[in-house]
Length: 243
Image (cartoon, rainbow, N blue to C red):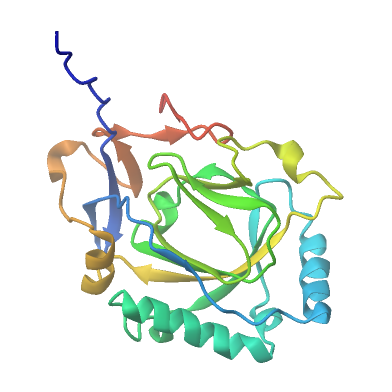
């Protein structure tokens, strides 16, 4: 007797309402996460020490992400890293986009599960990691995508896609993994790529105006799951009741 194949559970439908000019506009949330490990010269020990000193001054809690002064990214290898990232994004069809986009230097002590759609729904992130391999992954729980983070890892992802920085192979965030005294701080460059740019939308497969304006009164940017406001558990990466 033949058996019917097991029915796969339906994937959640995520949508993002973001501010476009003076109005709110809806769009899909991309599953695509282009990434590569680029040939990036190692930062000198003196610069790594400066990163660690500045990060210590921030007194980051486990899971927090904060900016650093951009001049702390400037070393002889910085220019070649920028070229390599620009060449990689150019091969994805995003030619000259990084040169027109502000770059920031960030530091994190892991990152809890979260999305950035409420603040950055108009953008995708492009990150270039400058730190050596510390046994951490960038994990996207909705898609199962997992990217090992090491010097030269470059990644582009939709700000509405839930993600976290966790210990290698983990599928939950545990603050104990990032306790004081552990070498687990990452430094990375980040660019905000405009999601309405045709090249960015095309590279990620973004569709616009996926929900009608009358789907519900909305005054703020938000992420929606299956047509309703969504909230994420920061430890497990699972969806919880929005109320």
